[in-house]
Length: 93
Image (cartoon, rainbow, N blue to C red):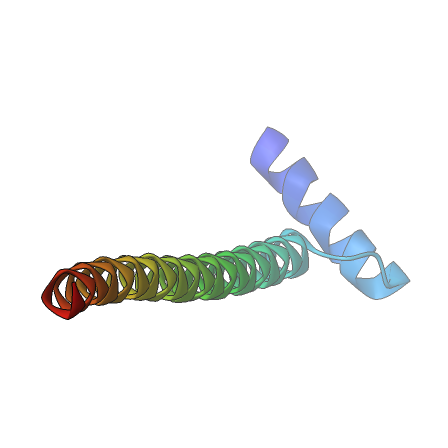
């Protein structure tokens, strides 16, 4: 008896323009699909941001290492020049 009543209610809803259970399920599936797309886009954006941050960090590290290397080279040149000047001065005496 209940199944007949439910079928009659479903038929009435279909005639009256109320969404059927199939339409509700379809809408729910579409909403879930849209949410999945949004989550995927968000994950891609997060990945892109992380990649840019990593690239920026690598570039900064490279520049810092180059600067430190140049400082060592400059200091070494200064030491060599100082030693050469000392040798030159001692030879001139």
